[in-house]
Image 1: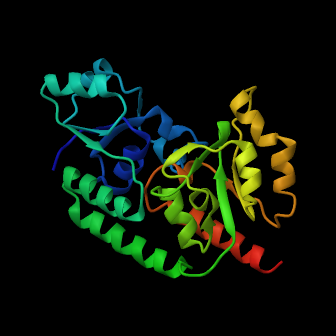
Image 2: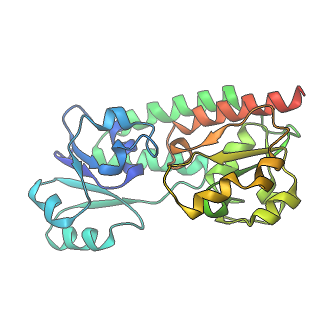
Length: 254
């Protein structure tokens, strides 16, 4: 079982906090403390934060570093050259990936038994929530700059589990990418799950307040927001699925 584990990625932060033994995890990334991004922000504040820089990480004398598959590659390469073990975890694009990543981080931490407990609980909670197979309302998740998630994404699985059809997928979108506002309007979704704004003067966020989007959402009985629970593949996505399922029922009851 490795000691002095450091995580430098928002998603491995959350997996590590769920799986690590007492005292095993010594630092998480600074993003883990941001409640707009991390549903475990309060818990993350109990750990020293890092910025993912190789120099600061080396001084922590880690026995293991957990990182994302695609981020901070320069730091990952430097740490490996210095003889520090680094385990990289790919972003989850499905519920199956959540299970796989729990097992991967559990194995890296020597906590395989804890990982299996979390997976069993995840499966039981998902089974209790799932409304798959129902011909539900059409929904789309819409974020700054028109970013959406189509076929082959974790969001697609989340919508399906809530009994909703992904309008972006039905419109031919695969993976994550930009959905022009004009295209969203023509898709005529029953439910737009709009991202929460961070504030400030971002042009990317301004489109979330566009009159055409407001008109498309005018008849929605509920207005769920996407956020940190949608970003990382952990069992915490099920709280978002529960909210989406409630939104689906509200649409059906109109």
